[in-house]
Amino acid sequence: MILSVLSALAEPTRLAAIRLLADGNEHCICELMPKLNATQSRMSRHMQTLKQAGLVIDRRDAQWVRYRLNPHMPRNITSVLKAVLDAEPEQERSAA
Image 1 (cartoon, rainbow, N blue to C red):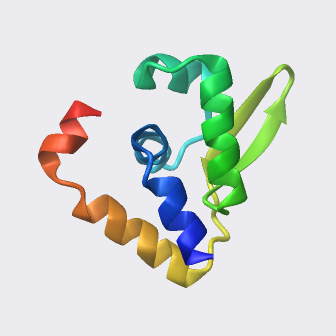
Image 2 (image 1 turned 180 degrees about the horizontal axis):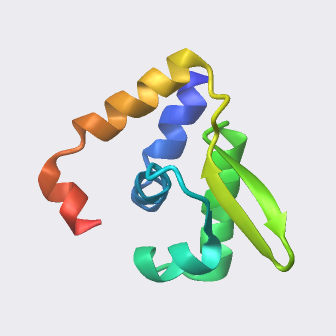
């Protein structure tokens, strides 16, 4: 499971999406697309990968799907996610 998490986080757009979701709020793809300079179909594929890795959950809201970090992640996955987010250099955070 940790390998799938690290693989999901290895892609810059997915890591940037996780960073945005780390604010604790729900976000729809329509909010993530302009912030990450990605098309709707590309964001949907990225979010599906993050969902399959167990990092995010989704909720349908009419025509929108809203995503947030999975609050039920196992402790070891939460620790990996925190370590990855904490390890990212400040310079790369501001570029995302």
